[in-house]
Amino acid sequence: MPDEGQFITDPARGITVELIFAMLLRARQRGIDPQLVVLSAVIGKLNGFDRWLELPLLTSRDRPVPLIEGVLDRRGDFQFVDVDGTSKTESLIPPGRNVQRRDKPSSQDVIVPLAKQLVAAGEKIIVFRNKRGPAQGCARYLAKELALPPATAVLGALPTQDLTAASQDLRGCLEGGTAFHNTNLLRAEREAVERGYRAQGGQIHALAATTTLAAGINSPASTVVLVENEFVGEDGRPFTIAEYKNMAGRAGRLGFNETGKAIILADTPIERAQLFRKYVLGTPEDVTSSFKQRDLPTWILRLLSQVRGVRAAEVAGLLASTFGGYSASLVNPYWIRQTEDEIAALVDRLLLAGLAERDGDLIRLTLLGQACGASSLTFESSLRLIELMRQLDIARVDQVKVLGIIQVLAEMDAIYTPVMKKGRAESVRASEVGQRYGGEMVQFLQRYCDGEVEFWARCKRAIILFDWIEGVPADEIERRYTTNLRQGVVSYGDIVRITDGTRFHLRSAHRILSALFPDQPALLLTFDDLLRRIEFGLPASALNLTVLPAALTRGQYLALHAAGARTLDAVLSLGPDILERCVGKGAAETIGEIARDNAPAA
Image: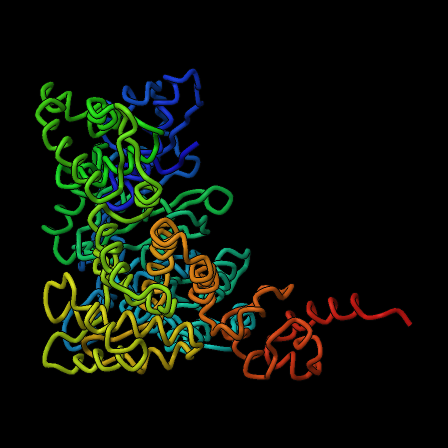
């Protein structure tokens, strides 16, 4: 039962969703009839999506908690659609309350009086900002302006080790009854904020957040405020109507509220009317396939990985079985025939690269091709990885060097990396790569490079990763690689994005390398430890600590490591005071219980 069915249109995730559907539909040809239920709360015209899936369409527009959606301008006028479906315009903020609070007009002039009014009425609010910095800044000034009691329960639940710049920021906000939620927070901090905000009678009354909170979290917010009227996200593109609806839908949740309210901020009455038409009255985007003709090699490779073998003339039929192929054929009945020559050339390329082989009249993927087809990588990135790895002396290569090579993949180049583009301050990153990985890695990172800035970004990702798995404190990584406080600032969210992206694609690389170097089992086994080091951010000598019976943070593991504990037995032998200083009272008690249970009987 796939939820969020609209993800089939997503440029990044769409291919995975669509090919899973296509595989399930082809199963019917083998007498297997899988039951499909596809759900979505934000979807436009289906464009035949239901017919392709051969599913009946069931539509419900009932919302358990009614939602009022509208746009508020700087004059305090609120244009909205009421719960009865009628459009209205009313004064929401009394005249005189919107005052300029900085050297020039800003959204703060509206957010502060609006938040004061809503919180005074007993509401809990979420203020959505499009970037991490503005979200933190919003929570800071609301903490000062609202003068709420401190959120003591949340403060007491926060981790105390391996903190970041955002960790200190969060504590200051919580002292004033507000918080923020973005990727700059440690996971334990985000979880503490979510629990504190959801709690009945919780002390967080205003929460500033990026879209990390826009899906999948049931919140008690009665009102959400969407500040940026351009809706430009961190990836540089405008928010879709579906994404807006997801954020608006955080307001008025069943079990928390009787009515929800979503408020977009606008500067002028003209802009208010424009945003009202586009987002409030707008319909979510139509369902379309994420398939693009330029991506044909990747789609064919992944489709071939789903079958044991297929005749060369039937490869085009695999593509036709996708929603992209189905849609293209509806528009142009000759589309598959016109694509056959391109597909035939691609099959020849697969054969030449050793990713496919002929078995009689069948084309089937080799083990290497299957690994590439099942991976997260595009066809071109798979070939790039294979070429680079074949240039290494694999029998003597240090497993950590693979982290550097992963940064050359197009998928990693697409990950935002803070780099100061003016001047040449970032050029030092190349020498830092040489110090950590050796001079050969500097040459590898220059391969397939679009320019110097991209090369610096690759270097920066590689050295951040190296320091992360060596256990360098997060705040030290932030300081070490922030070149300038105006440009190239490295925050914890950037570290997480880089480490998570590398770990995700390293899993694919692991399988590809297993097929590429089957005679190197010792090296391949070390990748399991490398993946765990990236996941936990720990040096190799601390990995045994991850089997402890209590779920710990990176800071707690590093504190135990610094105290000389490397194994479970070593941890159990620590004195109770030292153990509590390292992991906190709750975790220390859990570990202590294990020690008592394992103690020999008297």
